[in-house]
Image 1 (tube, one colour):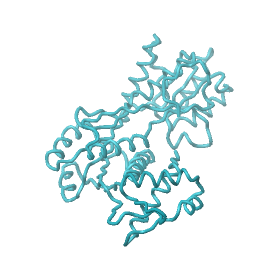
Image 2 (cartoon, one colour):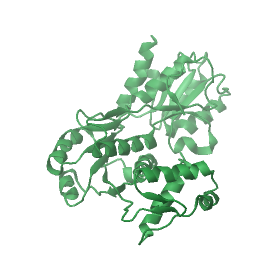
Image 3 (cartoon, helix red, strand yellow):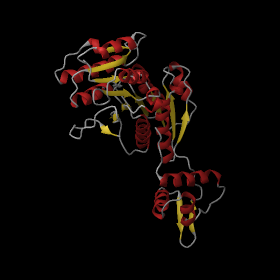
Amino acid sequence: MTVTAPEYMRIRHYILNRIYQAHEPEKLPSERVMREMFKVSRDTVRRAISDLTKEGIIISKPRQGNFIKPGTSPIGKTIGIIYGQGMGVHYSYNYLRIQSGICMALADRVAQAEFINLSSMENICEEIRYLSLDGLIWVNMQKRHFDYYYKLINTLHDMPVMAVTLYETPEVGNHIYNKMYKSLYLTTNYLIKQGHRKVMLAGYDPNRYGSNLCLSGYKQALQEYGIPFDPELVLDDNSEAPEKFRALMRRRPLILTAIHSSGRFSKMIHDIVHEENLKVPDDISLTTEEDLYSLQENIDFTRIIRPYYQMGSEAANKLLDITEGKITPPIQLEMDWILKKGSTCKKKENIKEIIIQN
């Protein structure tokens, strides 16, 4: 997902960057010059300047122009960022989206990030002891760790901690969370609302962390509509899956009307459906989880998307609000999944929207 900053934010970041290089009060380029530099309107330039003036970073002198206020430092709060161990989070595309949301929010609030290399859970307090942090964001904090270390860090270092959790919801502290089970609950609910009575869950891996939560969401949606759970429609993520799937496809009358798949199964399902001469979406509807696999070959799946960027942004903004005394902890904010409709599902106007539309 590409995130484009508003035009006035580009001007804001340009001005803040000049502060790093200024050794004395510096006059900013005129509004006309900045309009030409950024190819934007006068109102856009004035909004950026107005915001920075209110924050005390810029001073305006009649008939002279706008100047960076003497003694201004572009750096406000310093926020530490820790990633939970395991799951290859440092190299994950999705975790980079969380990181982008955090960093963009910090830049907007004139704050900086301090990335902490966590060697072990036992050393966390030692590793942040010598850092001058105003707050800490912990991404992918497991519940058993957060409930203990949240209290420990608050006691030893007297700083607010914000967790971004993807699977379990902590019982204490500040956290931005997204319930795993809702991914399949919402997509199954959506497909049933289109009139589908048979929904396959393809690519289910019982050994994968969080899979049982997904399965519970799938079952809950079926139960709410009085549809019996059929284990035959839950296709495991193993080497026998393609042939089992083909066998189900060839049964007549067709027992499947909709399929939700993991990203790794998306292309396989797409190919087999077309090999069996099924029309998408007239004969069958397809949804998938968004990841790098499902983005191959321009397959226009209807996707369920976890709002990674927004979760990072909210975590940073809420934590800064706490450090500035604007809000009182604990802050516990649930963010829902997003359904992005593609051509593999019918687009009925009379379907009641149950998910925020992207």
